[in-house]
Length: 334
Image (tube, rainbow, N blue to C red; front, side, top):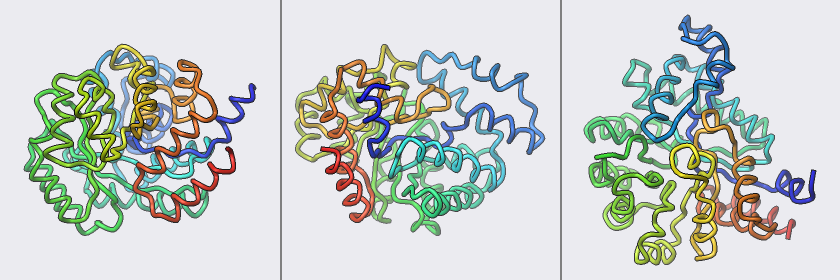
């Protein structure tokens, strides 16, 4: 192991773009399928993993939603989250914000309460047993109608203290941010922080970034590297210190590469870009692997790697005490 590899291993990390359903590893999928008497069309976890052959966002989403059908009970959601928390803690992640997609579960008959209670129990155990601080972000599926999103928002309100913010994900084609403007306005009134996906190289993605900044007034943008095509949007995001949650390895599956040069341009331009793992069970890399991939592609220095984590500290929605603790750890590395 090189000195830089060792440094990367020990680096305190923050992850801000992680779909908890996207951490469903094939082995766990098989165990949950057996528990819930669900037959899978694969003979083994290895065969299932070998079937992952995504080349764009829609082809990935087909497999992503199919995988969720094994999640039925509160314990299933606990086990899903706990498996990720153990992996994250092993990679020296100190703080993580995880997306969850309640509509993908309530739409097939699983109660919102079942989903959130399983995640919440794992969240509390992660803090107590792994010293991992976790917060939950509820995402709306943009390929459903805004009325369903509003109903989901209202259903979340009894659990408001368990959820730090709301996001927007799924298929971007024909589903611009402004479609959900009323939902996000209500979410802001209820005290939620706001983020939205502007996926890489999608149709009208730069216009979607514009809507996020000007019409929705988000606190953060997920993915968002296409902001480089518009100098005015770039300047505004820099002025407002908007965080951008890049996901290099997943970029390589659904676009033309890691977008590592774009990440470096954002970093050098003073944007609050961060590196995250997105859906690691499907794309084959958790946060450490994503950081390592960018480091190799760009020959990043220790200073660059620390700067990415400082960007994450500034962009995250952690309590001040958590931010201060992680910042102090980063200071000791410099």
